[in-house]
Image 1 (cartoon, one colour):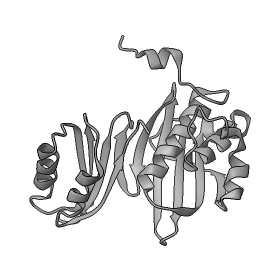
Image 2 (cartoon, rainbow, N blue to C red):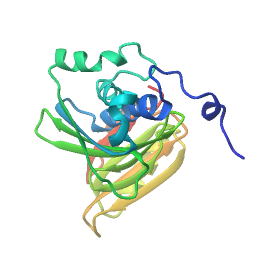
Image 3 (cartoon, rainbow, N blue to C red):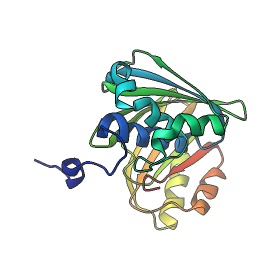
Image 4 (tube, rainbow, N blue to C red):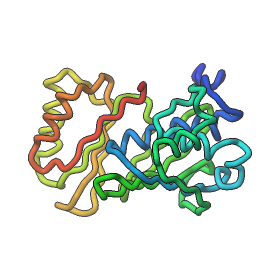
Length: 222
């Protein structure tokens, strides 16, 4: 059986539950990093066990703390509601039904200062581990355990080749690459997990590639 010491001991955390508190905080924090821009309003659509027990387990506080950038082991986590008000962040929670996801799942909707909206669905699967299931209309299924590039681009010939060359020239090894698209020639979404850190210069070079729309680098260790 392949079990990590992290799964046996659980995460260092504030709160009663590794899945409903620590995992929820980490999930929301990663989602905010994926959004990658300032937001003034956020809503949490709670599914399954999250919807049924979120107040008792402090999942609401943990999720709000996470989008505020508060880590799961930070003693400020229980004060998330107060901190959100101080930062003038609007927030709300509601129950919803999501398809084909773990029972501890949430749809987080970020309303950004620039008028854009980002919707991310993710799950807390136990022991502080998470899965990002969906970013806007694209399926993802990654666990944010290593440095990851999230790239939206037009589905044109040569784009992925140029991105791969930039990473290779920088000495960055690709561990996992997943590509989805709306339809042939339309907008596509590329997720690249790497064995190496992704510096800002790499992000800038990829952003400069013709037909690349947006680039986000998510460092799970932050």
